[in-house]
Length: 287
Image (tube, rainbow, N blue to C red; front, side, top):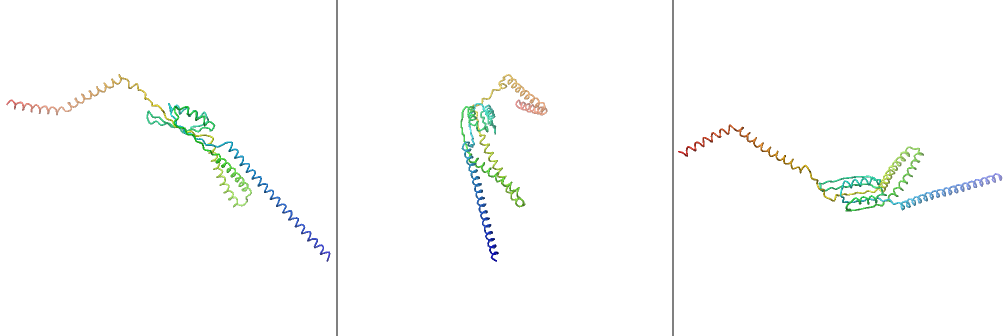
């Protein structure tokens, strides 16, 4: 009996030692996992901070500015000046958006032209355009800084792409139909947001890469109408007037002849009646 009790007590001690060692190992493993997770979080936060710092530095070095200019010019020859402006825009790598000419009458000619010019040649183009004018009536240049908006869009796009990658990974591992449908719906929403962000970024890049210049033109001299040589041909005009007068006389004579011959019976009767009246009155005076 004593031996059995001793063996039982020894077995209990062994079990208690094993349990305590397992608890220690589990606590150690949990603490290690916590340390790994904290390290991962720290690395991720460090990467995000470095990304933000890099974006801020890039924004500081290169500003995103949308430039626009409105010019009102007086020129000596509107059509030639307009052609020169269009040619200069093409030489600078730009393009014409709109070009119009308004001619109210022979003495008033106006026009407008809108061009997009690469940002690097914006000031050069303004100087060249003003050099084509006889007078610069108005010059208005504006700039809109969109650097913060651009950086924010890029950061949001990066975040959305990361979410897209995670959803694609979840979709590969998903086995239930409900999970697949939920992930597909979330993925479609994220991809739509990505398309919108990409469109906004491209718009800002285009607006900052090319500046818009709107030019109003007016011709500052009165157009003297040319003299028509045909109107100065006296001999031709005289012959024309003579022919017109002769035709008028011929028409009058022709009309008179037609009137007399056409009304001859009536005229004969009127003549006879008039002769009788005249003869009767003459006899009464003698009597």
